[in-house]
Structure formats: structure tokens, C-alpha cells
Image 1: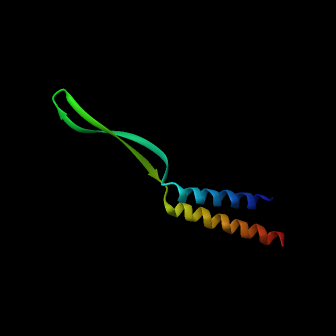
Image 2: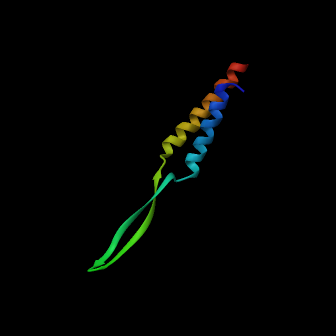
Image 3: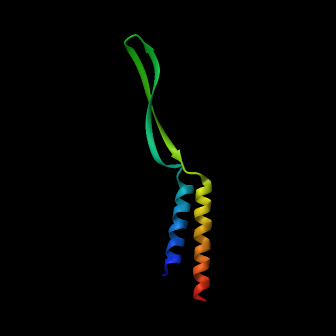
Length: 75
């Protein structure tokens, strides 16, 4: 396998992963819900950093293009 074909396959896999997951990085935040004197109620929320569908589309299109180019060079 040549380098273009390997890079194309990697880009296609990354594009599929970008569409499969809403976000790759998650983090938690604490928010104060209620406070009355010494009593404090907080909640913990999990948030994700979204991956733009545009990036997934670009990775898929780029990967397919590289696969087509690598097949054309063999012929």
C-alpha cells in the first residue's frame, strides 16, 4: 500500500468517527442551584466539546479523493 492510500483510509476512519460521536472531549462543571445561609446546593453537569459535522465531511471527502487518486496512479 502506498502512502496516499493509507492516508485516505485514515481520513475516512476519522470522518466516520466524527459523525459517530457528538464530541470527543467531555468535561464537568459545577453550578450553584440554591444558597441559603450555610446551606448550598450544587449540581454537576457533563458537557461535550462538539466536533463540527463540516470537519467529518471534509475528512470523508478528502479520504475518498486520496483513495481515487492512489487507484488512478496504479493504472
